[in-house]
Length: 283
Image (cartoon, rainbow, N blue to C red; front, side, top):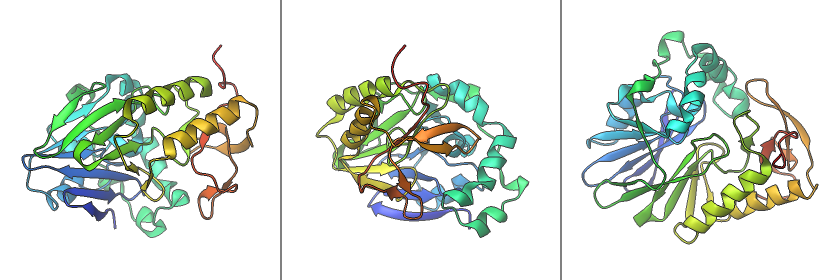
């Protein structure tokens, strides 16, 4: 089964793709917005059209393989131009196939992953079709407004989406229970902490529920503060520094030791970062 859908509330659905990555469909009175589009295995459009009859635009939180590759079936696609180099690298078919093949290790259904054929992969959207997405941009779907806030770190162009009237914040991968922060394009832990502090100042009090792209898909509003404290522990030298090998062979360390069977921190806390030990403080 390539997709699973679940209703979070009227007008809001979470869609899981074959790689166990979540993306979100938001429906207003006049239009709908697809926040991310998964790895692009199977027809994302068919799934979306089964949920809404409104015109759909796509808003990509960042250019990684598991977020941007299902968008080519749609006419209107938006992404922060800062992520164009990331998007170009992750459009590579070998990378995409390798990511899906390894997805069972991250909680995907092994049977579904094993059944994916080369012909199931959609072509990535052409870079020239991507419309710019700006920090602070506001979109009216009719009865529900989307407000986009940039949160650099996971990628240079990572965006979050506030569903204003519903007080829900979609974080994508910008900050979560296991935030990847070790790509060469990522900032230092110190800079990421500063980005989080600014982001919290801009958004604090505007949401009650956080939605993510991995794990369980959701969490409470404390995650931002939790990850700030993890960064502060790393900066103070209080990191467990557990060795980690990323999905593309990247070497990094985990700040707080994880129980990967239950996918939670051993110390019972929430929020984590995976970072490069050579990029902790600004030079």
